[in-house]
Length: 324
Image 1 (cartoon, rainbow, N blue to C red):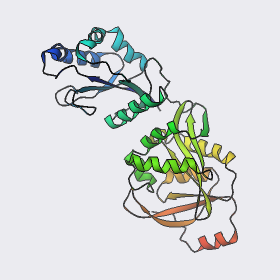
Image 2 (cartoon, helix red, strand yellow; image 1 turned 180 degrees about the vertical axis):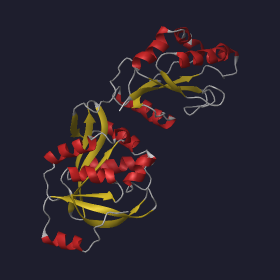
Image 3 (cartoon, rainbow, N blue to C red; image 1 turned 180 degrees about the horizontal axis):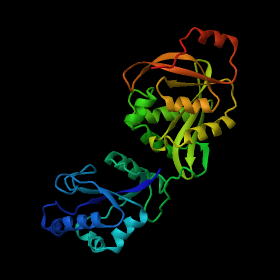
Image 4 (cartoon, rainbow, N blue to C red; image 1 turned 120 degrees about the vertical axis):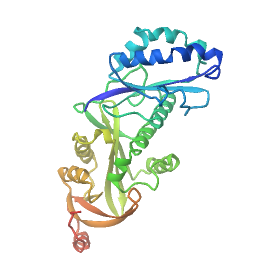
């Protein structure tokens, strides 16, 4: 998969946009935006019908926002510091206050995707709290784009992984496919409370999936209905590259409990294939309410390793068809 570079830059104005102080900035805005669009490596920029983003104030009424997408760090830096734009940069202190915290953040996103202000805000906050990382960085401390051929490893989940996990579950298409999500995947407080319990429970195995330096998902092993289960979540941009199978195979080398169970929505064929490639076999079905789809849904039950006769008897009465 090919990636592009997204950037967010926020700037607190010294005065209202229509004030004399900001007049030169406003007068040059169309010219600078046109320069960006004609520069090598430019892909996209945030704008309203006015042709700029000055009307958008998600970070505060006096804070202007600039968000754009470029081919890579080099083309963004060439535009910012090696073109006529540099004169604009040198005059920045005439128009904008200096922020005591980071005001610029960069990150990689799949080519063809447009960044959202919500995602940008999360990454800027992450950068401020945790410093540069593959998920949120600066031009001075840049990281390479994800590479599906890079080494895939697992490690224990740490607190700084959680904002990334939260962003993964904001994708509506991913939630629809997973089906069995929390009641409100956008509720950060509920998400944090859940992970506080997970991290404090030593009976739960929790692993972060890394592709090179990039956090791309997580795997957990937990008890459910007196059975040891596994679950995983992979960021949607990493689907379809064989990474979930690689991660699960690596996880199963260390998670030696057998039998091991997994549950997946009946029409989540991607996850079914991942589990079956890793040795899981379909043993039956169950039914559970799906918050993502707002209805009761069929759930496929899979098992890795031999189950006892009581388990086999219990599942034998369940319809095992997985056809929609």
